[in-house]
Image (cartoon, rainbow, N blue to C red):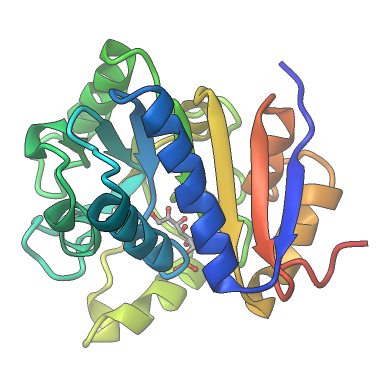
Length: 246
Ligand code: F6R
């Protein structure tokens, strides 16, 4: 498998959100029971808002779609306001017609997290694989919670996010020391299996990671650079995130 990443540089965050949501809309119109791969974090927030707009104002229906999320903190219940399940319910799922039983996010309180990860992979296989996976990128080039050093063939597993990631994510927590130090994540291999991938990045703080991913060597040192081997991957960037590209 080999590919070339398509890059689209757009004016601002709103244009990136609209383009990303547009890709999902196009997919769902073509394939109503599509399997969506979703992400949390600040970058996808306006994308979720745009999807809600498409549902409310253009009749786009998610009723037959299935959705998998990239990751979840270990130890947080889905009702915890910093869990990724909570984020998805509030930002997207509660505002569209997707069926609850078609949304798959790791259970942060699973008694056997490794088994939870195996079950996640099995569910993805059972629905025929992910059609389109939305990704953000960390300042260190991580995708999902696949930190530098992650195996390109890695599958869903329990991980310990880097200190830098824990620190970056602490901005969302009232008590910064309460950020869980372990998580469950889709692996790099899980992500690369998707038929299509779209990575979104906005803001100058992402510019270095974006340049490494696109113009650096394909290496686990920058997990997002491993996307270079995917046959259908697009980066949607605002001009600030693209500012360090040659
Ligand atoms: C979230 C995720 C993370 C984020 C990344 C960027 O589900 O998988 O890899 O995409 O940390 O986060 P933001 O968008 O908050 O800068």
